[in-house]
Length: 238
Image (tube, rainbow, N blue to C red):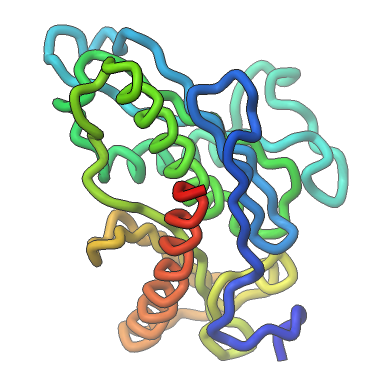
């Protein structure tokens, strides 16, 4: 029995609210169970120095957690004067995931920055951030298209992410914190709606797992992201 009472192949309740941030070119508040992440997309008419003169755009991301996003207060990283290794790893993952479904030549020389701020954390924050950031990015591109800044939408498809793991010896979809902190193994799957794999982060926490178990988890992830793709479409349609 899962702590939440969910079936092994059930996502937490998912909702995506668009237009949450008044000033950003695109924004989405994604809720996956008790995990809530605010994703905003900001557009600048320039690219980083290493991209100049290539007639391509850039998509990047920043990630952070509010001090009371978790059970106890966490110190703001700005107060420490540097980001943790975990924060840097996650925001690079978000950037890679979003760039996988963007035609950067079609963007021209501009930068889209996805800011993903965790309001409440209950496991799966990086996956929620990727899924919500996609919606925010598409909304920003739509605004640029309406203003004729872009000749066409530069998105090549959808991308979403979900966690899976082995909990008490059983493969499960979409781990919450109660499962994640004691899981035998956990994995984050970043997949495209076309069936492509952007990235898989899989780790044995308490015991190793074999290729068969990994394939079972991948199957669960494909089922879960299919539901997330539908939620993204619904949010963008509204």
